Image (cartoon, rainbow, N blue to C red; front, side, top):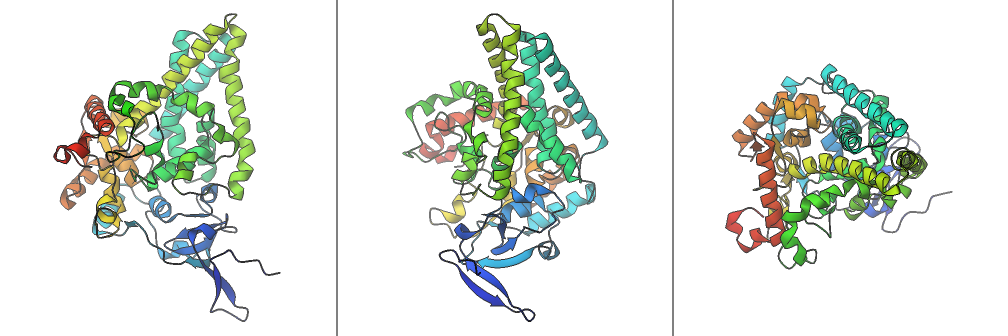
Length: 459
């Protein structure tokens, strides 16, 4: 029986052998869960043996052009020829452009430093990974078997954050190893600390694809309505009077990250609301079948970390206090560092604004340039060992599937090429300098200062 075509779609015959194949012409809304769109072409990934593993299935049913280009810096037409082409998207338009002179040079020079096939975790990275994993399980053993204390709550919470920074982050970017099973295993570190690898990939990969895009970056809206990261125009409905004071309480908002993650009902359907708000569809078969594993892992986390303290303390308030302290320690270690990455003075908070809004010429934006000007880097090698290389946000956003172990080595060349092409590279020698700049930006975003006096900073 012939399958009914979606509304707005039609079939066209493509030249072939005796039995002509049929291709669809449709809109992005009509993509099926086992299909992806790249550069306006629809591919069926059902039988595609993806070298990077199952991660390709997370975004089934979506336009993955930017995500594909981001993860495959060695892209050639031969890569796409391995997938079955089943149609095209009518009137496909992209906000970003690739293969610009800046992109070509920065990839060419960086790949001279990190040769193809060597961009994954080094011996030093795996040593660091083993240290943080060992520390985490040792402290977890004490938490479960010996009972919680104030000091243990703080250190144990921080150890969970270090798993998020140093282990699962590289793994869920496919950067820890060229072997997918290693990345999948270490990627479950997100679930060991109260998160979810599936929800993390939905949100974080979307964030990487559309960094600081006002409408598509889920991180930019993640703290609303309590707090604004996006620098909305004056009079925007998201703006509230309390945001005028957000620089004074933003640390308190960040401290609640653990609670909002562990008890987030999104775990039930694995549909990250930020990514959904960006226009991504999260209802394909892979997501659906992963739900039961995500729920079981979350229940395990709650039993180990939230239930067991009550067995060791006769006073429930003591157990609750230790649990919350552990959560705050984890939250601040993670979210404080994250807050520095894309929120600072002179940051580009809307990379497509000048080309698509306010009378722009609709010229697509160089994706590589936008990644540099929406991110910042601070510190050096030592900071990278503690933060999992996330202090090198510019380098990380340019090459997200490169292990963080390599970022200190490519950073000087990246800065050199940015200067040559007139691309603004923001660097802070010390983390406290980055933090001061972040506080100033947060205050300006909350008060709308840049809109009241544009000469004091970019919009």
